Length: 627
Image 1 (cartoon, rainbow, N blue to C red):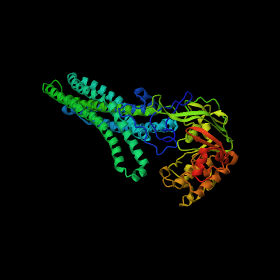
Image 2: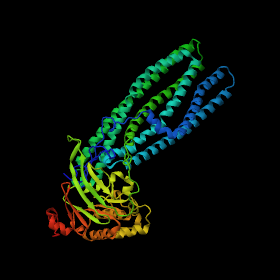
Image 3: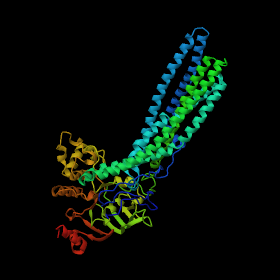
Image 4: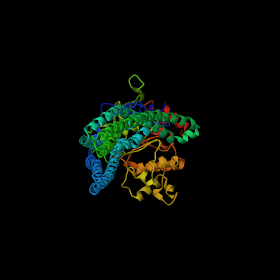
């Protein structure tokens, strides 16, 4: 197994409280495995729940817009309730052979006003719904970018993307067809019932009996919608994670001829989403017939009883028509209310998944910062003092995997270049991860600039540090975007100069866009060596006090390797350099070389000293023809 066993979280009493779980491969490992799939039992992974109070906090910044929509809804309800009564006036005027102009004009006015108010309310609600989605997405993205690295390791990126995309979209329906529809629907229902009681109390009793029986059946179904919706959304997250994994490794998959197997794997998760979606669809499909039975039953009962009462002269034709129109008004908000309640349940399911992420502590949120302003731009000494570290393993008896570092101790002097060498799995990349505070130690301390890194503010530590990862990622965008990531104030001359330092000026000659040349998704338009040099240029541009390089020349040819060596040497005593290398030719002139094996330091010294004193180093050097 590669170094560290698996790239997972670790916590101690002073750490950020990260969690153990499945994750991707550790530093020094091969291609990362897919992240842990989200649970598919319908419950959020973290047990988060969302209720109307949580929803209320989400909508609180938009109370003004919702209030406007509510007022418009009330005015619309009043205009709608007036229409049946005005129809009755028109019919009464016709029966009395009097002028119908006045009630007819008022009826048209009521129709127009109701239509205009409905359109304005719809726009206000749609705009508010979009604002809710926007704000929630921004909060989610901000939290995801600030989560502990170990927390991100144990989660599937595809599932997290699904929460930002699909789950937040479902919140829109809570606003557009949820709470406000319920509120305005209640007003229409109450107003219609009052008007019905005035027109004919007996017909009102018939209507209420028929509707209540049907609605009770519908509500029994609606109660099950939230859990079904949550299960469906979770299944979609698992499917999205599978697609993200496959697309991320599409070249490897094709080279291995594994397209069909991968398609079946992702297809299986798509089938899971299909099954969960069908369960939700069945519940939603039941609502329509149940509501229809209630409505049709009410209409048939009203027409039957009302016809008898008209025939007996107990009510007039105008009264019956007005009552039927009021029944239409009553039925519409009842149906909307059921749909709105279902939308709220669906939205609460989505909100539970969103809240699970928002409830996770930010990486720096749990820190106790004891020292501030300790690091500046001056080079700093780095010491590891008896450091031990293991990645968690939920399958082991004590919850920990095999030790990655065991009592590791060494010093990287300030302003000097210190190399860490050793066989794969020796713990080299984990050392850099601990210096960057992606994880905290089990025992011992990592000391930077004379201070335990756990006493420092993470932002301050990383502002003084530049880190080039082993796979040297390039972000989608332009060359300029990638270079400015660590130092956004740099001007174009500085960007061109640092590209020249790493022998990458030819990249600007590809077309006529220069620094605005696109690098593609994950830097796919660049070669591996170009991505690596671009990452190193980004680090050099930041002018760090501490430069961490993890296998910086693994993809470089001899000419570019020498250009990199010259660039690192040029920063001289202004920066402490801690570099991991398998190719010893790049570090034979380092000020100090630390040899690691099995998670411990087995030798230290210069190249010449180690050739004479360390069998392991001498063997590594001999294999690379350096002795």
